[in-house]
Length: 101
Image (cartoon, rainbow, N blue to C red):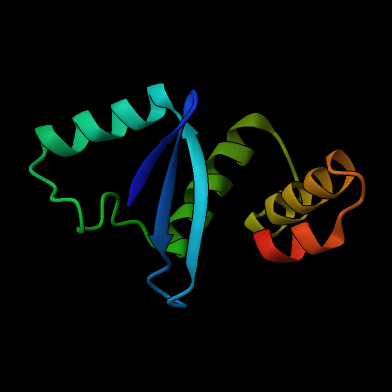
């Protein structure tokens, strides 16, 4: 389900692996880009838009990091960075971090 929320769209998704429901927001430009992509490719509202596995993301991240010469970067480190930024930028609200993770 999508709901316009000011300059952003609020998206409700259900994670395929865990079945958890999540809500997040994206800028109008991002929403419109994904919407046009789906229309051009005949993807229906309840279909998976980008059929990418976690392992595929990890492989591509490694390729990019190797190219840029970065060591020690992983999807886990991105998760940790995300959590740390949310924690610090929201008055050290650990409950918010727990909900988002």
